[in-house]
Length: 155
Image (spheres, rainbow, N blue to C red):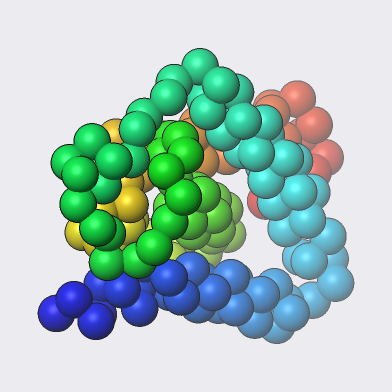
């Protein structure tokens, strides 16, 4: 069981990126443009919110607090937000707006990565939950702006 969580915590984040990339490349140019109009500002906003969150809230990693060796070696820096969980939840949050079935699959993968990061001792649940909340908030704001402020650009 540990091996599943170790592999999920370290490497599973690549799969959602590939899945969304294949989806993007399989779309016609006009749809690709709309995806980029949504995805790029969403990713930028997610990144900015994550930086801000990391400055505002410091969460010592569980292996430091609990004085144990995590299943994956890591530096004892700030655990909030979880970069891995942030990346996969950003991909999932973007994906859910593009295609509901695709988004559900991406969210399952994101939840798996998040749970694995907690299981291996690198993050507290607040670190991964915060990452997901940042992704959902940022994509929701960008989606709202595109739909209501720039009505010519539709997703």
